[in-house]
Length: 249
Image 1: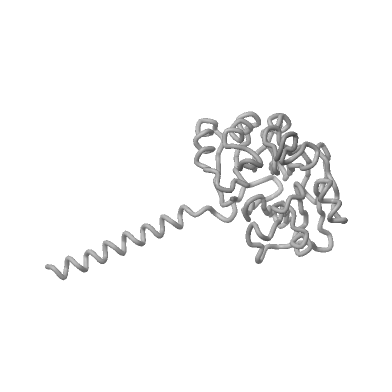
Image 2 (image 1 turned 60 degrees about the vertical axis):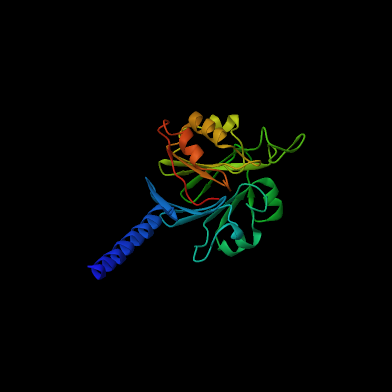
């Protein structure tokens, strides 16, 4: 009886361990999500921090590609590269050159275009087209958080965010910003990537304030460092906005 009990104990332990491993894998955020658009399936890849990659039926878009923020191993070259601003965690000129191919387009804020001469500068309100994708630049700036008195971390008129029109879907990548009036006035946003880390961008409360104003269907907090993402989930639990937490520290 004693021997039988020991064998049963080992089996129970193995079953428990297997269940824990499977649970751990099931809770690991996916490397990318897929949504359907009228222009084809859109894969949204979460490289890390502010770095994203979109694959719209084979048309590849890299947003703020930075090699120190995640792995670019086996990532495809870009048809379009977007850079919101020139800070080191958003601009990596060496990686941009590696992702470039013959017909790659690069749309950036003005300061980045001074660094990379083949870039096309955009300012808030500008519209461009790249292949099957429409690109609109929107303001990105701090109102409250300052480096020093009168010196915001992201001054108005320097950085930008992007709204990408892909078929019948509109994807908003905000860049480094707070919940500005321009953001809160946006319309018809299907997916929004909003930054959430202090002191540089927004608190969860500021993100929730913006999201409740322009009401994206899906919200991804990104660029969130050590911010507790449970807070934004709690703040928007009754909003009918789907909050998706991915590996975007």
